[in-house]
Length: 220
Length: 322
Image (cartoon, rainbow over all chains, first blue to last red; front, side, top):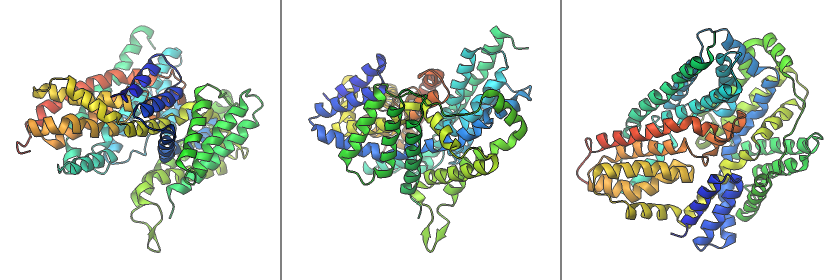
């Protein structure tokens, strides 16, 4: 039970807004020591998992490509493109992106999308451009945050419909250890109701962005 | 065969270049700290497989301290201004999108073809890691295409990459640090402790209460651990299988599918899921919690919906034979 002190450190650290890296170091130390582990063992376990999860950081490799294209006007081009479509609003645009992201994820194509390669250079500038020239920075920031949210919601609640995704394989493997056999197909089938609800709930909230915006600011 | 190790060498060289360029950046007063930080990341990529767990732990610790005490500055590398970008965008048009789309296109094609394409009986790409390796290949192709077409100064891609990397700053290593913390938590038995706490403190006699505790527990546990994959075995062993499946005869496939997705609702609102919530906030120049705030109502409504869905479906399609 004492190991839960590590969780308490995490919660307290986030609540008083200390730099998360320091909170992580403290939480690892506290829960490890509370479980009776030697500091060397904690450091080794931490180092091994840190090294083994390197593949997560490979996503940053795309930044030189995005950066060089931004240098030659990628974001500006995305804005110019949207400014031509009068019917484009931030809500409709992000709804379309949510649909695309979720649809690709259901067939296993989660590589299409992502914050570094799609949201920052393309989706966010397009959605901001659809706000119009006069929008204030607070509205722009809100639209950018929702652009990231569309990417997350689409990916999370689409990928579980794809049979070979890691979460489904994890479920199947874990249940098998305990003697319960489930078919991956059944798991993806029962992910569909939640996927539909996620699209409806988040899609509605995206469309409501347009209403909230047009009420007080009155664009055109 | 191309493996993850090749992708790591490529990434290590790119980060080593960031370290050198940071050290030469006279406009950044903290340039040497930036150089140290990116050099440590480069070392992790280039040498990580050969170093002992403890040495990797020391690299991680050094990164935690340099990043955690706010020693990083922001690099300035020479770039273009807004007016130049608008002119270039107008002149070059939609062709600018093409190199950007090479990366996801390569990742998709590589993933689909990895199992089929062989060279002398061996696969060209390690099929287990095909997506990540293809992503690295896509970056090289797009890099080559952009440089050939746009003819920027030779160091420009690395300078621009470093500029963006510096905007992400210490948050760049947060996802890996959280994965490492998760491993220490697992070793220390945090999961079992949370599971037994839940099962001993909450009365679980009504099917609806059990389903609610399982779904909300998945979300809360995911918020703490940053990852639904860590929450699933604990909650399912503690509550899902003994109560929902064995005691009340629920369907294990429905329980697991909706249970995992309840965990994903937790992922939407936790700073622990840094690569989904904190890194994009940095990339989009937003307040650290802005993305979480945008997702919070969706996560809450969807968790409620999941709980009800599970309650109405899991027993209806259940099997009463345990």
